[in-house]
Amino acid sequence: MARAVQLAELESGVTAYTLRHSAASWLVAKGLPTRKVADFLGTSEQMIINHYGHLAPDYQDEAALAIGRR
Image 1 (cartoon, one colour):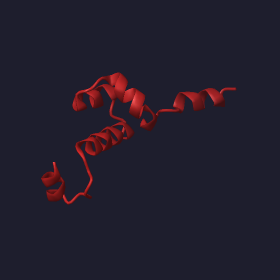
Image 2 (cartoon, one colour):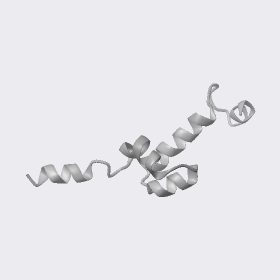
Image 3 (cartoon, helix red, strand yellow):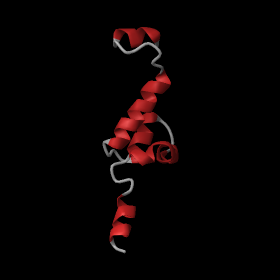
């Protein structure tokens, strides 16, 4: 992993966990369905929702709409 980090000219200390976390964060933030993110990363959809769901572009849309309907 250290060699790959060096070849990619990434900061030292970058780990597989860092890269996986960044990928999940970016994919969810870009609006990729959580099922597809989970499949890509080889984990459960529930884990993606629990850990990264707040990054989804539409995360609070339903709540905002409900407030607007008061």
